[in-house]
Structure formats: C-alpha cells, structure tokens
Image 1 (spheres, helix red, strand yellow):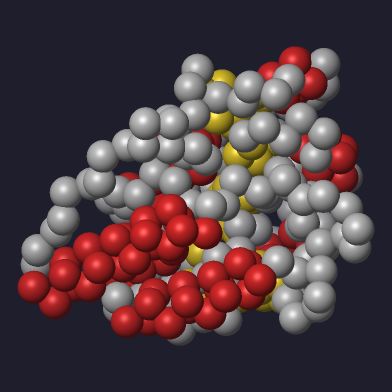
Image 2 (cartoon, one colour; image 1 turned 60 degrees about the vertical axis):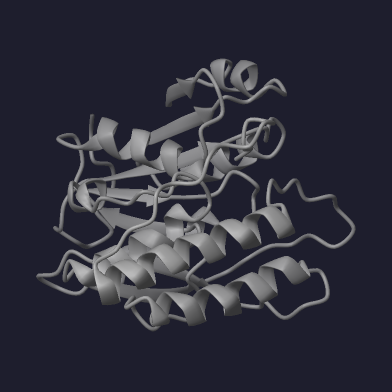
Length: 254
C-alpha cells in the first residue's frame, strides 16, 4: 500500500478510513471526493442492510471490510485501526453522511505539531445555522463539558467525526464504548495516556431541504452518553469502572 501524497509533511503514511452503516447513497460521493486526496481508502461496512454493500462492491480502488452484523461506529473504527496497524501511521476518519469535505484533510495534516503524535479533531465551523439539527448543537455542548469533567482535553468540538488518529496508539487505549460514545471516550483516555489532542477548523455541510440520514437516537444515545461519562468519572476519581450495559433487543443500532 502506498502512502499517497505527503502534503509537505514527513510524519508518516496516511489512510482514509470511512465507517458506514446504511448510507448507500451518501457514502459514494464521499469516497469519490476522498479519492482526490491521493490517499488509500478503507471502508468498514458495519453490517449495512440497505444495499450499501452492493454499492461498495461496484467501486474499484478501495478496500472494504464488512461486519456481518451491526456492531457500532466505535467497533467499526477499531476494526479499521486493527487492519491499518503496520501499514500506516495515521488514520484519517470521515463520516459517510457527507457532512465533511475531504478537501479539508490537508489542513488537518498540517495541524500536526512537529515531533508529536496527537489526535487531530476537525472543529466544525458554522454549527449555528437553522439547518443544523438541534441534536448536533446540544450534543456538542453537552459532550464538550463532560469530556472536560472526566479529565479529557478542553475542546470546542468533541463530537466531530472528521479526525486524524495516530497508529498504533489509538488502537491500544482500552476504549470500551463501541458506538457513538467511542469518539468521546477515546479523547478522555488519550489525555490520560499523555497523547495530545489538537483541533483545526473544517467545513460542515447540512444541505437545506435535504433529508439527512442519521442513526442518532436522542433519548437512547443521551442515556448512553451519560453512562459513558459516569463510568469515566468514576474511573478517574475512584478507580472504579462500571460494567458495559446490555445490548438493545433491536440490535443496538449504529
């Protein structure tokens, strides 16, 4: 596997990693725009049932890993990390719903401080428009506050899925969450482990009038977020961890 363009940096090889679950229409444009980066692309299909797998099979020049059943976004990311360890030093993650512009990836790469191996977060700009879902606005503020309370870094956008992760470090932090909560827990554990976390501005697109596919369920995921932060705070201050909650009967969707 080649490392593609270097974007003026010698910090190592980068691979684009896209976790996807039931985004048959959205993920294809994301992949096509990501191709322009000149980087290898790996997609983890987390048990999609809407034809995503068939659409991915028709695309050449990418590597696809498939979970036979839905395990969660965090599990998909961990599968991708494990596959990339030894092949690349960095995983560039993009969401499959099209809200990120892959053209912003070079600016994230340039944000890596010399001599450091941080997690880089794409801080989404323009998150105040009327087309931005209220769940995204509230969730970001809620998450930012509790990440800090749990001993994580003080950040402006702890929920952005556009990131750069150092490998193998990100794969070995012991993150227990396997769904959306993975992306906040890994920030807390990174700070505990002395791994820097930095931010760089990126664009975000919530197209007016268009239906956005989201697997976020406000009540269920609020409860999961609360449980994750409670577990991390207990672990930080008292060295006590909570057992993982049982799976939902519906398969505990992505």
